[in-house]
Length: 144
Image (cartoon, rainbow, N blue to C red):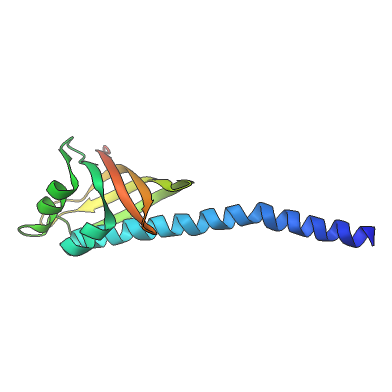
């Protein structure tokens, strides 16, 4: 009887230890999905999607140092011809801190008619209304 209880306790202990890891992996996947959706909305110039994906207090810092608010950023990427053709992510890592998450990684950016360039990005997400929204973004160009 004692051996059975000990086995049950070990199983419960292992399940409890693994549950936070599984939860963190699920959240990391949700944050990555939000980031991918944001990039797709930028490429397709989908203003409605960007309104939903970006936090109202967004601070967006471009690789050239230019800083924009949410409304400034959305206006810049949804007016005129598309500024971006593709974004290819590598070395992406997500760290979750409760209702906040940080995504970092390298991105190859391709603009129409221009050579691709690489940046290192840092994106901060918050859980807002059950959705992960970007609240801060900063990128820095990487040397070729």
